Length: 270
Image (cartoon, rainbow, N blue to C red; front, side, top):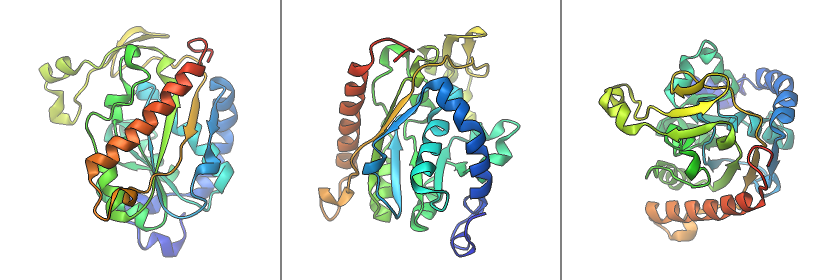
């Protein structure tokens, strides 16, 4: 489990992170993930060598997104398991049978309170501001940074005084065809009442045409994740404007994603 001194400053799920358990799972799964997705994580030399940081990434690949399984092993290979990495996740991911184990891997329910507590303890926090809205963006928009107007991450970074580290991911949106987020369908079905504002429509293997609750297995698309230069929110002034910080972060990420997209020669193959 996390160090006792640190754990005393962490509420609930955050204190459950177990580096030894994370190491066992990572070492067992990473060789398979790396080969299947031919995964690369670039730019970790740009990451702050110590201390808290808010890592902000676009989210890709639908329900079976490989973003965290690809990034986590690379992060720990670089910095070791003594540096906590927490991932904020939508509550739906905890409904699977192995959901109770996720906090031991550092995956916790997304909330401003969890992010703030983790950052103030000195941890790294990985957030996907666009959430499932981003992860299910249509294939024709696969290389577009779209957080759906969510800027809470910038507010959290300003309030805790930590750097924002942008990161972009490409390839996971090619693991199946994403036809539509199904926003209108979700509202007609009343799903927003259970915090589900989309009902995605996808085509893939093995089920063909599917909706949100029946995910296809991801195709072995080449996944590349790239860490970018850290952003100091206070470079925008003593009292940074949240929208200005968010706009800068998204523009930096979009430029990087455009560059990675130009480097890709073929879908899936990379």
